[in-house]
Length: 430
Ligand SMILES: [Zn+2]
Image (cartoon, helix red, strand yellow):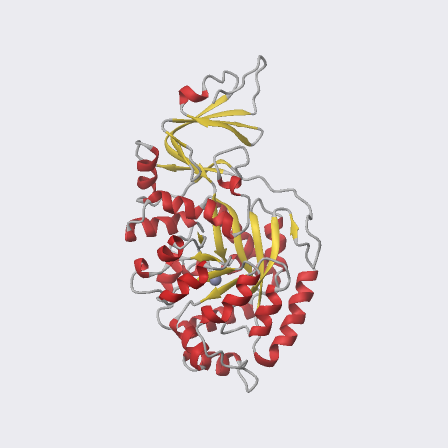
Protein backbone atom coordinates (compact mmCIF):
# COMPACT_ATOMS: atom_id res chain seq x y z
CA UNK A 1 0.00 0.00 0.00
CA UNK A 2 1.18 3.56 -0.60
CA UNK A 3 2.24 5.81 2.23
CA UNK A 4 0.55 9.16 2.47
CA UNK A 5 2.87 12.13 2.28
CA UNK A 6 2.29 15.80 2.83
CA UNK A 7 4.16 19.00 2.10
CA UNK A 8 5.45 19.83 5.60
CA UNK A 9 8.19 17.74 7.25
CA UNK A 10 6.71 15.51 9.96
CA UNK A 11 9.49 14.47 12.30
CA UNK A 12 7.47 11.89 14.22
CA UNK A 13 7.40 9.76 11.10
CA UNK A 14 9.96 6.98 11.20
CA UNK A 15 10.75 4.94 8.13
CA UNK A 16 12.33 1.63 9.11
CA UNK A 17 14.35 -0.12 6.43
CA UNK A 18 14.89 -3.79 7.35
CA UNK A 19 15.90 -6.97 5.58
CA UNK A 20 12.57 -8.56 6.31
CA UNK A 21 9.27 -8.35 8.19
CA UNK A 22 6.94 -11.19 9.16
CA UNK A 23 3.94 -11.87 11.37
CA UNK A 24 1.55 -14.78 11.85
CA UNK A 25 -1.33 -13.00 10.13
CA UNK A 26 0.00 -12.95 6.57
CA UNK A 27 2.53 -10.13 6.44
CA UNK A 28 5.75 -11.29 4.76
CA UNK A 29 8.11 -8.85 3.07
CA UNK A 30 11.81 -8.88 2.15
CA UNK A 31 13.31 -6.38 2.02
CA UNK A 32 10.83 -4.55 4.21
CA UNK A 33 9.89 -0.96 4.91
CA UNK A 34 7.76 0.07 7.88
CA UNK A 35 6.33 3.53 8.46
CA UNK A 36 5.73 4.37 12.11
CA UNK A 37 3.87 7.55 12.98
CA UNK A 38 2.92 8.72 16.46
CA UNK A 39 3.97 5.37 17.88
CA UNK A 40 1.69 3.46 15.51
CA UNK A 41 2.65 1.21 12.62
CA UNK A 42 0.93 2.78 9.62
CA UNK A 43 2.36 0.90 6.67
CA UNK A 44 4.43 -2.23 6.10
CA UNK A 45 5.53 -3.82 2.85
CA UNK A 46 8.31 -4.03 0.33
CA UNK A 47 9.99 -0.76 -0.73
CA UNK A 48 7.97 -0.63 -3.94
CA UNK A 49 4.70 -1.25 -2.07
CA UNK A 50 5.35 1.48 0.48
CA UNK A 51 6.78 4.02 -1.92
CA UNK A 52 8.57 7.25 -1.04
CA UNK A 53 8.01 9.01 2.28
CA UNK A 54 10.21 12.10 1.92
CA UNK A 55 9.31 13.67 5.26
CA UNK A 56 10.19 10.67 7.45
CA UNK A 57 13.32 10.02 9.47
CA UNK A 58 14.96 6.93 7.96
CA UNK A 59 16.36 4.24 10.27
CA UNK A 60 18.54 1.51 8.84
CA UNK A 61 17.92 -1.97 10.26
CA UNK A 62 19.20 -3.97 7.35
CA UNK A 63 20.43 -7.33 8.65
CA UNK A 64 17.38 -7.64 10.91
CA UNK A 65 13.96 -9.28 10.73
CA UNK A 66 11.05 -7.22 12.16
CA UNK A 67 8.28 -9.03 14.05
CA UNK A 68 5.45 -8.11 16.40
CA UNK A 69 6.20 -8.07 20.14
CA UNK A 70 5.64 -11.44 21.83
CA UNK A 71 3.08 -12.95 24.22
CA UNK A 72 4.29 -14.81 27.29
CA UNK A 73 1.22 -16.62 28.60
CA UNK A 74 2.71 -17.91 31.87
CA UNK A 75 5.26 -16.20 34.10
CA UNK A 76 6.00 -15.71 37.79
CA UNK A 77 7.54 -12.24 37.77
CA UNK A 78 7.69 -12.16 41.58
CA UNK A 79 10.38 -14.87 41.39
CA UNK A 80 12.72 -12.66 39.34
CA UNK A 81 14.80 -11.39 42.25
CA UNK A 82 17.09 -14.36 42.81
CA UNK A 83 18.72 -14.98 39.45
CA UNK A 84 18.82 -18.55 38.20
CA UNK A 85 18.57 -21.73 40.25
CA UNK A 86 20.06 -25.15 39.54
CA UNK A 87 17.63 -27.55 37.85
CA UNK A 88 15.26 -29.20 40.30
CA UNK A 89 15.71 -32.63 38.75
CA UNK A 90 13.67 -35.24 40.60
CA UNK A 91 13.46 -33.23 43.83
CA UNK A 92 10.31 -31.24 43.18
CA UNK A 93 9.38 -31.45 46.85
CA UNK A 94 12.69 -29.87 47.83
CA UNK A 95 12.39 -27.22 45.13
CA UNK A 96 8.91 -26.22 46.29
CA UNK A 97 10.32 -26.01 49.80
CA UNK A 98 12.98 -23.58 48.57
CA UNK A 99 10.37 -21.41 46.84
CA UNK A 100 8.19 -21.40 49.96
CA UNK A 101 11.17 -20.36 52.07
CA UNK A 102 12.06 -17.62 49.58
CA UNK A 103 8.51 -16.29 49.71
CA UNK A 104 8.45 -16.47 53.52
CA UNK A 105 11.70 -14.51 53.71
CA UNK A 106 10.60 -11.82 51.23
CA UNK A 107 9.34 -8.45 52.39
CA UNK A 108 6.74 -6.58 50.30
CA UNK A 109 9.63 -4.38 49.16
CA UNK A 110 11.60 -7.46 48.03
CA UNK A 111 8.57 -8.68 46.06
CA UNK A 112 8.11 -5.30 44.43
CA UNK A 113 11.76 -5.20 43.37
CA UNK A 114 11.55 -8.72 41.98
CA UNK A 115 8.40 -7.96 39.97
CA UNK A 116 9.90 -4.74 38.59
CA UNK A 117 13.02 -6.67 37.59
CA UNK A 118 10.83 -9.31 35.97
CA UNK A 119 9.03 -6.63 33.97
CA UNK A 120 12.35 -5.19 32.79
CA UNK A 121 13.61 -8.65 31.83
CA UNK A 122 10.34 -9.35 30.00
CA UNK A 123 10.69 -6.12 28.05
CA UNK A 124 14.32 -7.06 27.33
CA UNK A 125 12.89 -10.22 25.80
CA UNK A 126 10.56 -8.42 23.40
CA UNK A 127 7.37 -9.09 25.40
CA UNK A 128 4.28 -6.94 24.97
CA UNK A 129 1.64 -9.18 26.61
CA UNK A 130 1.89 -11.44 29.64
CA UNK A 131 -0.03 -13.81 31.84
CA UNK A 132 1.58 -13.48 35.27
CA UNK A 133 0.93 -15.41 38.47
CA UNK A 134 0.82 -13.03 41.43
CA UNK A 135 1.92 -14.72 44.66
CA UNK A 136 0.73 -13.53 48.05
CA UNK A 137 0.47 -10.62 48.70
CA UNK A 138 -0.48 -9.79 45.10
CA UNK A 139 -0.39 -5.98 45.34
CA UNK A 140 3.23 -5.64 44.22
CA UNK A 141 2.61 -7.67 41.06
CA UNK A 142 -0.65 -6.00 40.07
CA UNK A 143 0.52 -2.45 40.79
CA UNK A 144 3.84 -2.88 39.00
CA UNK A 145 2.21 -4.44 35.94
CA UNK A 146 -0.40 -1.67 35.78
CA UNK A 147 2.37 0.91 35.95
CA UNK A 148 4.27 -0.81 33.14
CA UNK A 149 3.81 -0.92 29.38
CA UNK A 150 2.87 -4.63 29.43
CA UNK A 151 -0.68 -5.83 28.80
CA UNK A 152 -2.38 -9.03 29.88
CA UNK A 153 -3.62 -10.64 33.07
CA UNK A 154 -2.32 -10.86 36.62
CA UNK A 155 -3.66 -14.08 38.15
CA UNK A 156 -3.84 -13.96 41.96
CA UNK A 157 -2.61 -17.31 43.24
CA UNK A 158 -4.64 -19.16 45.86
CA UNK A 159 -4.29 -22.40 47.79
CA UNK A 160 -6.73 -24.41 49.91
CA UNK A 161 -7.60 -28.06 50.49
CA UNK A 162 -10.00 -29.95 52.71
CA UNK A 163 -11.44 -27.84 55.49
CA UNK A 164 -9.11 -25.00 54.50
CA UNK A 165 -11.13 -24.29 51.36
CA UNK A 166 -13.79 -22.15 52.99
CA UNK A 167 -11.25 -19.64 54.32
CA UNK A 168 -9.38 -19.73 51.01
CA UNK A 169 -12.58 -18.90 49.11
CA UNK A 170 -13.31 -15.96 51.44
CA UNK A 171 -9.74 -14.69 51.00
CA UNK A 172 -9.99 -15.05 47.22
CA UNK A 173 -13.16 -12.93 47.12
CA UNK A 174 -11.63 -10.30 49.41
CA UNK A 175 -8.52 -10.05 47.25
CA UNK A 176 -10.50 -9.82 44.01
CA UNK A 177 -12.78 -7.14 45.44
CA UNK A 178 -9.76 -4.96 46.03
CA UNK A 179 -8.86 -4.65 42.37
CA UNK A 180 -10.62 -3.31 39.32
CA UNK A 181 -11.19 -6.21 36.95
CA UNK A 182 -9.48 -4.43 34.05
CA UNK A 183 -7.35 -1.33 34.27
CA UNK A 184 -4.29 0.04 32.48
CA UNK A 185 -4.15 -2.95 30.17
CA UNK A 186 -3.98 -5.50 32.99
CA UNK A 187 -6.91 -7.69 34.02
CA UNK A 188 -6.97 -9.29 37.45
CA UNK A 189 -7.80 -12.98 37.42
CA UNK A 190 -7.46 -15.89 39.80
CA UNK A 191 -5.13 -18.88 39.84
CA UNK A 192 -6.08 -21.90 41.92
CA UNK A 193 -2.49 -23.14 42.13
CA UNK A 194 -2.91 -26.81 41.13
CA UNK A 195 -5.22 -29.80 41.66
CA UNK A 196 -3.01 -31.12 44.46
CA UNK A 197 -3.05 -27.83 46.37
CA UNK A 198 -6.63 -26.69 45.72
CA UNK A 199 -9.75 -28.61 46.55
CA UNK A 200 -12.82 -28.95 44.29
CA UNK A 201 -14.80 -26.26 46.13
CA UNK A 202 -12.02 -23.74 45.61
CA UNK A 203 -11.76 -24.62 41.91
CA UNK A 204 -15.53 -24.24 41.53
CA UNK A 205 -15.53 -20.90 43.36
CA UNK A 206 -12.68 -19.58 41.20
CA UNK A 207 -14.55 -20.61 38.04
CA UNK A 208 -17.68 -18.85 39.26
CA UNK A 209 -15.98 -15.46 39.77
CA UNK A 210 -16.26 -14.48 36.12
CA UNK A 211 -12.59 -13.52 36.20
CA UNK A 212 -9.88 -15.08 34.01
CA UNK A 213 -8.65 -18.35 35.54
CA UNK A 214 -5.32 -20.14 35.14
CA UNK A 215 -4.03 -23.23 36.93
CA UNK A 216 -1.03 -25.52 36.83
CA UNK A 217 -2.27 -28.90 35.60
CA UNK A 218 -0.71 -32.34 35.16
CA UNK A 219 2.76 -30.95 35.74
CA UNK A 220 4.26 -34.10 37.26
CA UNK A 221 3.58 -37.81 37.50
CA UNK A 222 3.58 -37.30 41.28
CA UNK A 223 0.55 -35.04 40.87
CA UNK A 224 -1.31 -37.77 39.00
CA UNK A 225 -0.39 -40.28 41.73
CA UNK A 226 -1.65 -37.99 44.48
CA UNK A 227 -4.93 -37.23 42.71
CA UNK A 228 -5.60 -40.85 41.80
CA UNK A 229 -4.37 -42.66 44.91
CA UNK A 230 -3.59 -40.07 47.60
CA UNK A 231 0.00 -41.32 47.84
CA UNK A 232 3.52 -40.34 46.81
CA UNK A 233 5.96 -37.46 47.35
CA UNK A 234 3.34 -34.73 47.02
CA UNK A 235 1.25 -36.35 49.77
CA UNK A 236 4.36 -36.25 51.98
CA UNK A 237 4.97 -32.62 51.06
CA UNK A 238 1.39 -31.53 51.81
CA UNK A 239 1.14 -33.59 55.00
CA UNK A 240 4.57 -33.10 56.55
CA UNK A 241 6.27 -30.08 54.92
CA UNK A 242 3.25 -27.78 54.65
CA UNK A 243 0.82 -29.40 57.10
CA UNK A 244 -2.32 -28.97 55.01
CA UNK A 245 -3.28 -32.63 54.51
CA UNK A 246 -5.62 -33.90 57.19
CA UNK A 247 -8.70 -36.08 57.63
CA UNK A 248 -10.82 -33.49 55.82
CA UNK A 249 -8.77 -33.82 52.62
CA UNK A 250 -10.47 -36.02 50.07
CA UNK A 251 -8.73 -38.17 47.48
CA UNK A 252 -10.09 -37.33 44.05
CA UNK A 253 -9.60 -40.82 42.62
CA UNK A 254 -9.11 -39.49 39.12
CA UNK A 255 -6.49 -37.98 36.83
CA UNK A 256 -5.78 -34.23 37.32
CA UNK A 257 -7.29 -33.39 33.91
CA UNK A 258 -10.55 -35.13 34.84
CA UNK A 259 -10.49 -33.32 38.18
CA UNK A 260 -10.11 -29.83 36.74
CA UNK A 261 -11.80 -30.04 33.35
CA UNK A 262 -15.26 -29.19 34.69
CA UNK A 263 -14.50 -25.88 36.41
CA UNK A 264 -11.86 -24.87 33.86
CA UNK A 265 -14.24 -25.57 31.01
CA UNK A 266 -16.95 -23.54 32.71
CA UNK A 267 -14.77 -20.41 32.77
CA UNK A 268 -12.71 -20.93 29.58
CA UNK A 269 -9.67 -21.26 31.83
CA UNK A 270 -6.01 -21.79 31.01
CA UNK A 271 -4.24 -25.03 31.94
CA UNK A 272 -0.48 -24.64 32.34
CA UNK A 273 2.02 -27.42 31.60
CA UNK A 274 -0.02 -30.58 30.79
CA UNK A 275 3.24 -32.53 30.84
CA UNK A 276 1.58 -35.80 31.75
CA UNK A 277 -1.77 -36.46 30.14
CA UNK A 278 -3.19 -39.58 28.52
CA UNK A 279 -4.26 -39.80 24.84
CA UNK A 280 -7.96 -39.78 25.79
CA UNK A 281 -7.52 -36.41 27.49
CA UNK A 282 -6.72 -34.74 24.16
CA UNK A 283 -10.23 -35.30 22.81
CA UNK A 284 -11.73 -34.37 26.17
CA UNK A 285 -9.88 -31.05 26.24
CA UNK A 286 -10.67 -30.35 22.58
CA UNK A 287 -14.38 -30.45 23.39
CA UNK A 288 -14.01 -27.63 25.91
CA UNK A 289 -13.05 -23.94 25.74
CA UNK A 290 -9.93 -24.60 27.83
CA UNK A 291 -6.66 -23.29 26.42
CA UNK A 292 -3.11 -24.28 27.30
CA UNK A 293 0.07 -22.56 28.44
CA UNK A 294 3.12 -24.61 27.48
CA UNK A 295 6.51 -23.82 29.05
CA UNK A 296 9.14 -25.92 27.21
CA UNK A 297 12.23 -24.80 29.14
CA UNK A 298 10.51 -25.24 32.51
CA UNK A 299 9.49 -28.79 31.62
CA UNK A 300 13.11 -29.49 30.75
CA UNK A 301 14.67 -27.73 33.71
CA UNK A 302 12.43 -29.45 36.22
CA UNK A 303 12.94 -32.82 34.64
CA UNK A 304 9.16 -33.08 34.80
CA UNK A 305 8.39 -33.41 31.18
CA UNK A 306 8.45 -36.54 29.06
CA UNK A 307 11.97 -37.69 28.09
CA UNK A 308 12.02 -35.45 25.03
CA UNK A 309 10.04 -32.34 24.36
CA UNK A 310 8.72 -33.93 21.20
CA UNK A 311 6.82 -36.37 23.41
CA UNK A 312 4.96 -33.57 25.17
CA UNK A 313 1.39 -33.78 23.83
CA UNK A 314 1.25 -30.13 22.72
CA UNK A 315 1.33 -30.97 19.01
CA UNK A 316 -1.58 -33.39 19.35
CA UNK A 317 -3.52 -30.87 21.43
CA UNK A 318 -2.87 -28.14 18.87
CA UNK A 319 -3.89 -30.42 16.00
CA UNK A 320 -7.12 -31.14 17.87
CA UNK A 321 -7.85 -27.41 17.99
CA UNK A 322 -6.82 -26.57 21.56
CA UNK A 323 -5.28 -23.06 21.65
CA UNK A 324 -1.69 -23.26 22.93
CA UNK A 325 0.50 -20.32 23.86
CA UNK A 326 4.11 -20.33 25.00
CA UNK A 327 5.13 -19.44 28.56
CA UNK A 328 8.42 -19.10 30.36
CA UNK A 329 7.41 -20.00 33.91
CA UNK A 330 9.77 -18.26 36.37
CA UNK A 331 13.25 -16.86 35.77
CA UNK A 332 14.52 -19.40 38.31
CA UNK A 333 14.31 -22.20 35.75
CA UNK A 334 15.47 -20.32 32.64
CA UNK A 335 18.89 -20.26 31.00
CA UNK A 336 18.80 -16.59 29.99
CA UNK A 337 19.71 -14.37 32.97
CA UNK A 338 19.37 -11.19 30.89
CA UNK A 339 15.80 -11.69 29.69
CA UNK A 340 12.48 -13.50 30.11
CA UNK A 341 11.29 -14.30 26.60
CA UNK A 342 9.23 -16.84 24.72
CA UNK A 343 11.63 -16.22 21.82
CA UNK A 344 13.92 -18.60 23.69
CA UNK A 345 11.08 -21.13 24.06
CA UNK A 346 10.63 -20.92 20.27
CA UNK A 347 14.37 -21.48 19.86
CA UNK A 348 14.34 -24.62 22.00
CA UNK A 349 11.45 -26.13 20.06
CA UNK A 350 12.97 -25.15 16.70
CA UNK A 351 16.45 -26.46 17.35
CA UNK A 352 15.65 -29.49 19.49
CA UNK A 353 12.39 -30.67 17.95
CA UNK A 354 12.65 -29.15 14.44
CA UNK A 355 9.28 -27.42 14.76
CA UNK A 356 8.54 -25.20 11.79
CA UNK A 357 9.13 -21.50 12.46
CA UNK A 358 5.67 -20.26 11.45
CA UNK A 359 3.96 -22.60 13.93
CA UNK A 360 6.22 -21.18 16.63
CA UNK A 361 5.55 -17.58 15.61
CA UNK A 362 1.81 -18.28 15.75
CA UNK A 363 2.14 -19.75 19.25
CA UNK A 364 4.25 -16.82 20.46
CA UNK A 365 1.88 -14.19 19.07
CA UNK A 366 -1.71 -14.77 17.92
CA UNK A 367 -2.26 -18.06 19.76
CA UNK A 368 -0.85 -16.53 22.94
CA UNK A 369 -3.22 -13.58 22.53
CA UNK A 370 -6.11 -16.03 22.18
CA UNK A 371 -5.05 -17.89 25.34
CA UNK A 372 -5.05 -14.60 27.28
CA UNK A 373 -8.25 -13.40 25.58
CA UNK A 374 -6.48 -10.40 24.06
CA UNK A 375 -7.18 -8.70 20.76
CA UNK A 376 -5.07 -10.58 18.14
CA UNK A 377 -4.32 -7.35 16.28
CA UNK A 378 -2.03 -6.40 19.18
CA UNK A 379 0.41 -8.93 17.73
CA UNK A 380 -0.13 -8.30 14.02
CA UNK A 381 2.13 -6.08 11.94
CA UNK A 382 -0.65 -3.52 11.68
CA UNK A 383 -1.87 -0.27 13.24
CA UNK A 384 -2.90 -1.93 16.53
CA UNK A 385 0.52 -3.58 17.08
CA UNK A 386 1.50 -3.20 20.74
CA UNK A 387 5.20 -3.23 19.86
CA UNK A 388 7.70 -4.20 17.18
CA UNK A 389 10.95 -6.10 17.67
CA UNK A 390 14.01 -6.63 15.50
CA UNK A 391 16.15 -9.75 15.49
CA UNK A 392 19.49 -10.09 13.68
CA UNK A 393 19.23 -12.63 10.86
CA UNK A 394 20.96 -13.70 7.68
CA UNK A 395 19.30 -12.04 4.73
CA UNK A 396 16.87 -14.24 2.84
CA UNK A 397 13.13 -14.66 2.44
CA UNK A 398 11.19 -13.84 5.63
CA UNK A 399 10.59 -17.45 6.63
CA UNK A 400 14.26 -18.34 6.12
CA UNK A 401 15.20 -15.30 8.17
CA UNK A 402 12.86 -16.44 10.96
CA UNK A 403 14.44 -19.88 10.85
CA UNK A 404 17.83 -18.22 11.19
CA UNK A 405 16.65 -16.09 14.15
CA UNK A 406 15.55 -19.29 15.91
CA UNK A 407 18.98 -20.82 15.42
CA UNK A 408 20.71 -17.90 17.13
CA UNK A 409 20.90 -16.64 20.71
CA UNK A 410 20.82 -12.83 20.53
CA UNK A 411 18.10 -10.96 22.40
CA UNK A 412 15.61 -8.96 20.35
CA UNK A 413 15.70 -5.16 20.31
CA UNK A 414 12.77 -2.76 20.14
CA UNK A 415 11.87 -0.98 16.95
CA UNK A 416 8.66 0.31 18.54
CA UNK A 417 8.59 -0.03 22.32
CA UNK A 418 5.15 -0.74 23.81
CA UNK A 419 3.46 2.31 25.27
CA UNK A 420 1.79 2.15 28.67
CA UNK A 421 -1.91 1.36 28.12
CA UNK A 422 -4.10 4.06 29.60
CA UNK A 423 -7.42 2.28 29.52
CA UNK A 424 -9.51 2.63 32.62
CA UNK A 425 -11.85 0.12 34.19
CA UNK A 426 -14.21 -1.43 31.69
CA UNK A 427 -15.56 -4.31 33.76
CA UNK A 428 -17.14 -3.79 37.17
CA UNK A 429 -15.78 -5.53 40.24
CA UNK A 430 -17.26 -8.89 41.04
ZN1 LIG B 1 4.04 -21.67 36.95
